[in-house]
Image (cartoon, rainbow, N blue to C red; front, side, top):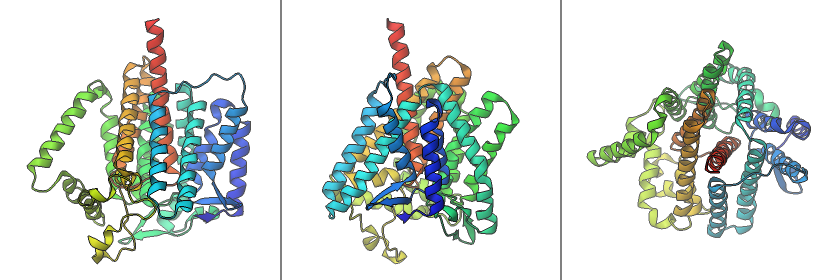
Length: 428
């Protein structure tokens, strides 16, 4: 974790003031700006405590909620409860399994607080489709303003985010891997790929050429991240947004998809993840074989991690299975897997269920909402979550991109709340 410099602190203070004075339906904007422009591994250190930008904004947001009066309360549902349970169980198991208990409590406890604070803020300040449209417009503005930073990094190897603590240019096989304000290029590319769907549906709703600019920029940012995973995510997003008219049959398509995957898995000599990681790749420098080895090793080592995971020790698989790479640690580039390695099989299953019910709620909202523009709006959010689920196969989320995941889950909980309210109105 890097200590914040003066520009970083000033920007956080400005965003905090913005959050305090903004109208309720506009309070998410400074969090989105922080998500896009402030590194998630830089923090303001006060008395040994680390305050990242999103953590500061989350604390202020919850305090604003606490001191507000006569506000309509949020009706929490099973998605909210599942999210909190997943976070709580993962935190407790990680601490139990860790060797350095105090540091594990500080690290995982901080992550737990961040996730809950941000989630509460999202759930409280996002109430309807107009709020979601405003959020997408915020992403639109941020994506446009990111352009000079990305051009400078990709074409001139100068990282303008050095002003807020992000340093270094990542080059692999002679190709610059643009990461902007994010900790890794794959995270930046996954972020851009996930935003493609809501940005495209925004264009479809307004039919104005200016809304094509952020769509093209999301594609450009995905490309310059120079990773196979983000490009595959973008391809999935493009295919899914083109499947808008098929959303009524999404359950049937999903069942057939699972059946085909199982058939291919048992029909091939090697497992399906060998096909996904080794046979299917976009970049010649892709590390797909490493990801294949991770899954293979996780299955072999299941008896060692299924109950409590590895805690803060982490797996040392690189010492036994790919020592020839001279890796200093086992790089877990799979979010589903890292949930298990940190919190055991139960935490992994909770996370998978959370992803499933999030997608289900978003698609159902897209089907049942009456207005066509809102149908496209919700479909864009559903695809955004599906693209993140694809991305989890090639990268473990950390840093500010996790805020995008919490935002998407909060939107699914809001969709479920609206669905239950409408159904209650009809029943009465």
